Amino acid sequence: MLLHGAAGGAVNWFRLIGPLAEHFQVIAPDVVGYGETDKPNAAYDRPYFSNWLKNLFAALAIEQANIVGSSQGGAIAVQFTLDNPQRVKKLVLLNAAAMGEMPLSFWKVIMYLWQNTFPSKLLARLMFSDDVYDKSTFDPDLLDYFVEVQKKEGGGRVAWQGKGQAVSPMSDDDLASIEKETLFLWGQEDRLCPLQHAERAHKLMKHARLQIIEQSSHLPYLDQPEKAVQAIVAFLKGEK
Image (cartoon, rainbow, N blue to C red):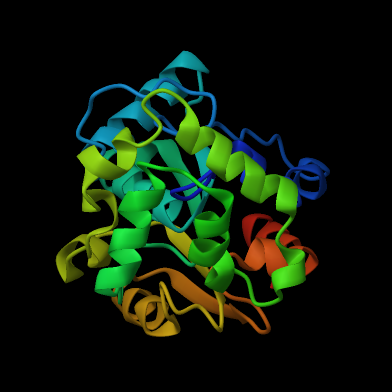
């Protein structure tokens, strides 16, 4: 189960779905509020997303799955594991949010809210410029899709109604209570969810390991897709 972050939709995984599907059955949904899904009036906090994922598991008759989460998707994956530990095999967290306090500047917040009210490709390019290490790796079609999703009816609700609650820092106790094998797969140059966040959570979680991907930022699966796939496959298959 692949859970994307707080922009776009399942298409964010376009470089990973094929390679991972050579080894596993892959399900990559649009998280509620994003992509082509409904965009209801809702809290859009972690419990809300966790309950949505529980309902998705039920609708697809999934008893248990490995969950791979990026950014906000990682935060949702951890919350779902806290709420439904019996439904999770292993966790892979790619630069997951909520592992620490995100260093957001006043202007970054203003840009985010403005973009979710008056979506533009220029502002989107500025907002996501730090998410990849090599700017040439950011597919312009993906950026276009980010903007198109925000232009859909209700496209800004997840930002305005969620108010960042889904990515608020998780407590030491919550992280320490996770019993599942977990791989923190982290882009070394991330400034949104810096490496210190992964180091903190890694120390708290009993069965966690940390693997750093160099020359990558907040979206290491776009910067270094081959390395990301290799690490995910090896971990989920139990290889060392």
